Amino acid sequence: MKKLLPCASLLILAPFLASSLQDKTPSQPPQAAGLEARVAKLEEELAAQKQKNEETRRLLEQTVAYLGGRAKGAQTLLGVLDQAEELGFTAGINFQSREALLAGWRAYWGETEKGLPKLPEPPKEPGATGAPATKAKASAAPARGSHE
Image (tube, rainbow, N blue to C red; front, top):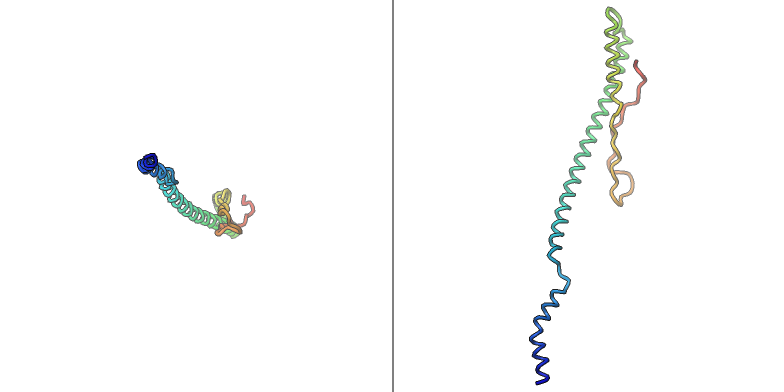
C-alpha cells in the first residue's frame, strides 16, 4: 500500500504536470501574430512609398529636362534678338520702341537660367557600390554675356 500511494498520486497529478509543461514550451504568444501582421502591413506601405518616390523622381527628371530645354530656347532667342538688332530692326521711325522691346525681351529671357533646378544625386542603396543607376541628363545652356 505504501508503494501504491505514490504511484496513484503520480497518475492523478500527471495530466496537470503535462499541461503546465506544455504552457512553458516556447510557442508563439498571441502578440507575435499581431506583430507579424503589423510588420507585413508596414512592408506593404514601404513598398508603396518606394514606388511613389520613384514616380516622383521620374516626374522631377522630366521637369528639369523641360526647364533645361526652355533655358536653351531662351539662349537661342537672345541670339536671334542680337541678330535682329544687327540687321537693323531698331533703325527707322520710333526706333526707341523697338530698342525697349529688345531690352525687355533680353531681360526676360536672360533670367531663365537663374535658379534653374538641378537634380540631386539619387541616394545610394545600402551596400551598393559604384555610380548611381540613373544620372541627371538635364544640363543648362552655356552662359551668355550680358545683353543690356
